[in-house]
Amino acid sequence: MTSDSGRSARPPFGEPRLPPGQRLTEGWPVLTYGGNPRIDLATWQFEIFGLVAQRMTLSWDEFMALPQTTDVSDIHCVTTWSSYDNEWEGVRFRDVMALAQVSAEATHVMFHCYGGYTTNVPISELMGDEVLFAHTRNGEPISADHGGPLRGIVPKLYFWKSAKWVRGIEFMNEDRPGFWEMYGYHMHGDPWIEERYG
Ligand SMILES: Nc1nc2c(c(=O)[nH]1)N[C@H]1C(S)=C(S)[C@@H](COP(=O)(O)O)O[C@H]1N2
Ligand SMILES: [Mo]
Image (cartoon, rainbow, N blue to C red; front, side, top):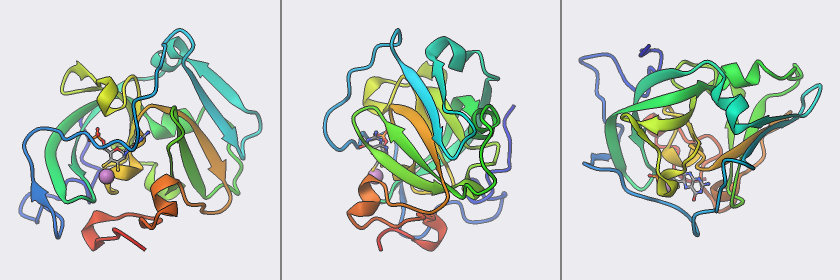
């Protein structure tokens, strides 16, 4: 069920694949601000809140019962490493969003994480087949260092927009800075036009 709708994440054959200022890396570096949060699947919760008709809470079993899909995409980190062909398995953002009655006024989301990290993304960037809440990469469960049991994957934007240890989404009717955005990272973060800072 691999899709090719992640256009700027995986340009068509013959078009440049490495965004400006990036270099290809082997392996998968760990980049976390602070330590790993402690997470127990028995008490793990995923919350959908903000501009929704009713706040929703999903348990791990409820989340895993949602339609599962895979997608292959590239990672572009603002610290200039990129990684090709990561196969992610999980649940599409838009399938999670469809569970809640989101107000037509919502324009942006804030991803909230165990440990307190946050990051903001326009809803328009999240509707594609390539945007997932992933629990598995290349057939292996995502480790705690990389945001397991569940992390966001938003391949068209720099990797700081891909929230590790995600615990919920807040729907908002305005853009608001998340953690790195408050320290000067770009509000949008498109690697193809180097929206790194400011
Ligand atoms: N919860 C949380 N998510 C996070 C971060 C973090 O510190 N905490 N770091 C971000 C940054 S800056 C990057 S580059 C990627 C790194 O993911 P990785 O450690 O799996 O490579 O996660 C992003 N998501
Ligand atoms: Mo990063």
